Length: 308
Image (tube, rainbow, N blue to C red):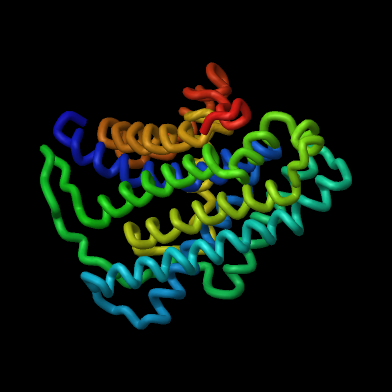
């Protein structure tokens, strides 16, 4: 572990950044509806598929650079955000809103989420393939600098910086905009928010849309880094993102970022010490320990208290 410390740190921050972006979707929906949207992992999967379709449609077979690379990445981000954001909104309309209007229990909503998750998986399996789908490399993975045993590559830097920037933008949106204030008010007290003129349906729509956009961005970064997708690609990653949200404090935007980065680091440190086969065991052990000893997470549920 000592010899691989910096390599594990760099890789942990890279993967943890993807966890954090997906965790934001869990945190937003839970903060507003007190609902764990277990179909959010498939929203992430749709983002990876949209990225795959863009890269395939452009006919890329070799890495590009300069303005061409910037154009490809922007196009991928737009397509993935539209696909994942639109799917998240559609999911809310079909799977959750009818139950919410009937006053159904959270258990019913949870069962609906699991059903929607399985439906989306099988839909893409029938449409495309059950086998892993390789994606062409879009950017040269050049080494920028070396820190101890670790190497900072262009793709790793892109993943980390993009995740932090998107987190900061979302943080500012929730903190300063009118819709953001509506999200915080609804998270704190839905009944009072309605009396003050907050449109709950609009807030829920915005919440799912923002979570979907973040998952779509995570899908782009995942494909750029790992160069693969599959109809079940979101299952394991989604559970780890949920673990990250719980670790940081589900309902806390900054906690989602902190939890994602910490989980990525702990996973990779554990894999260096015990072997890569222990990586998933370590992640789920963290989930169990947090739920047992600190269920509110490291930073608590700040969204409902009016903080970002």
